[in-house]
Length: 630
Image (cartoon, rainbow, N blue to C red; front, side, top):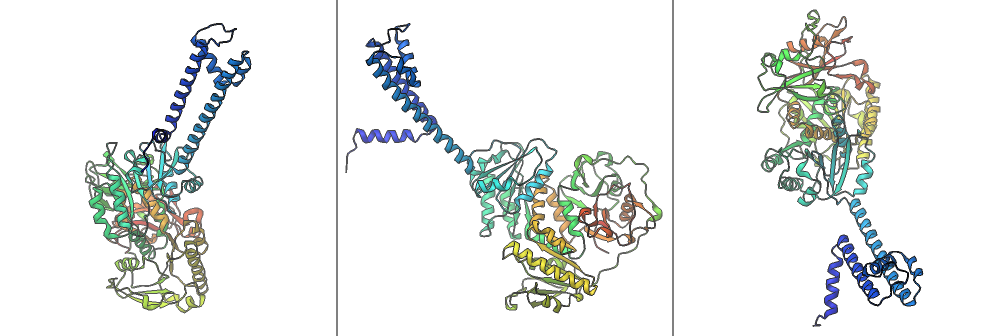
């Protein structure tokens, strides 16, 4: 074995020194140069080589001359003695070498810094910011919604941490239009890694949104991410506010254990399945939900109103002109949507309202309340009958959708599923059905002859599902082709039935509109909206869960002539009073004449000014929170 000598030892120390970074190299270079200048200056002074025309003949003058020759090559020409010229030439060459080395170090440092910036490795110095973990097609909708929600708040920052290439992230983020006060910052890293989470200063964040995780081991990856976040101590007084997507209902138990009350899970598949099941029964319902879930229109707020404490819920319904009351939040946080009209608002409880903005929630100054009692005419809505539902296509949510339809179905209802996979692959043995029966027909849903053979006139509702196992654009295109065939058949045969279609990419919404679907559910977009809403207001997750479940009060669109006579224009105060008489909370209406008008939200009007007169038609509907559709 070779014995290390002095040169080996020197090389080892030199390599370690060079690896210490830019600042150390600059300091080292400066010290070497200062030592060199000092030694040459001493030599120059000791050998009396100073120029004869020098004003001062001391060491300080010698130091100045050597320093100037080291930084300015032109000074060599001023020397007259050859010994001095050669010495200063040597000093100048060393100076050129030193300056070149310094430039190289600085250039390398700048290049390394730019490379780190491109990689997104620098630490974020923000407080009260919103952190988004992950990257998916939902990112654009979430950021747009959060931007709109914070449009009236100064200096809002949204930080994205993802394993995606930072350059690609920034290219996408540049195309998002946001209010001027909202800034976007992206960083690259693994959000299950504590060090990378600290990179985005997650301990001082206002809220954290976790996007869709990889399909493999989703639950394990989510638990790892939550543990990584919660193991970083908070640097502010409030606990973490984490909102995450959850694919499996069985994951809720472990999330509750790990989250310690700091995590709000959004059940993706369950939520979309409920939306599809509900909208298949009521035309226009998806438009109502989209309005309530988006920050661009009316939103749901929680508001304390001390002046209404001690009054009934029914009185609160009529106490706002530009806001619609839908429920009460109890002191312990529990939610009661559409409680009985005689329910008294207790001290400390909050009203749950729909309003255009929180600063527009004001008690009405109109007195007395202008209710036209003569127009109120209460009659029962036609009772539902057993129905036939046709489901075209299939997805991983089909079993959940069928199970949700069971919650609303009457005895003797039927479901027919038409898709292109072999019948032996069909297995609904895990779906418990008591009121419905299932029939399966194999065929290509984009084929006109196959659709004709289904005799769609025999069905009350049609649900068209996207195939999520193929490219989203291809899946959406197949649905649009199917819808165009269906609409043509319906128009030709003058049929009356509801069509609900599922769209994957929100950018293809206009295609569904052109195909004239009664309702289209854009799952990823709606989930993005829910995540954004819950990240801004924690208790909204409970409100949405109450709204979307079959038990309790839900949103219904009911015929207006079951509430009031429409012989002349009426204000919405009268509609609210009529709905209250039925034990319901009215929140808006839908105009039949605008069903195809996108500019007018397809006729849906949420939270209208209650004092404005409206000329209703017999085919218009009232949007209410009610316990049933009868």
